[in-house]
Image (cartoon, rainbow, N blue to C red; front, top):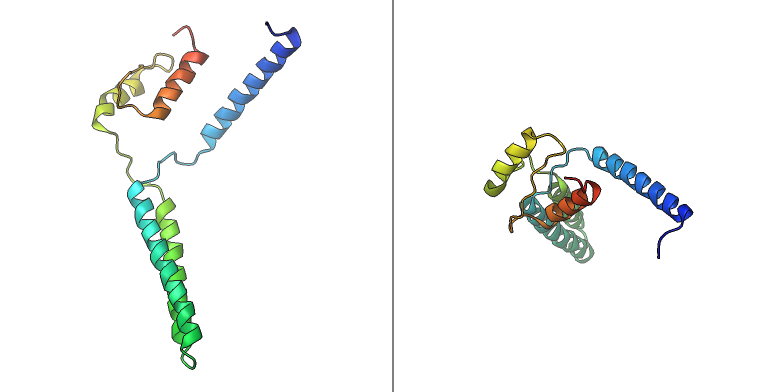
Length: 143
């Protein structure tokens, strides 16, 4: 069943708004640098160790009686470790490494004009790359 003229106009307007909003979101990303999985794992370890230290500090605070100051110090150190772990986990990597199988295609696509991107069907390409390629093909069917 074909769309009526009003439905077609609404659909076209929604598509224009989506494309404009999508461009705004892409340009609003500060660095675009991906998170480093090594940093995520080490940050999670720091958070877990810090949580354990904080729980130990609370236990020491309740059980030591007159020297509760030690429990407070251990709890604060645990909180500091947890904070450091979160900051360490979410910081972007300093150097973005390009996998060796993508270096050639990256160099050639960087020098190519915008409309003539190479479409690779490499099985090692990521899920998001394939989705982006499909989106580009849908937006530019004449390519």
